[in-house]
Length: 132
Image (cartoon, rainbow, N blue to C red):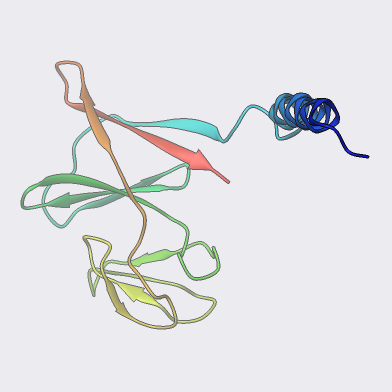
């Protein structure tokens, strides 16, 4: 016969084992994503594109914008084509405008935008790139 005491004991056992699994999962999955800080010594002029360590820093009319250099489709390295003011994926042909918006190709969305921080008197730009 299953008593109320047996039911409460089982519930307590499940709660304790669930808590232990939650703690163990935190150790197994690791510390989280790695973040690389990328600094650009100057702010680009409008329609100027700078590249460093996996980040494109683009000069737009509204100010600098940072874009991850990986294609959102399958992660290929994007190339900047100065004559067209576009980014292109050499793997599958996706194309993006200077602001990172999708123009064509198999990619379903635009390039990944990254927040830009200004630092110092010289206008140095800093960007955090999350590595996956």
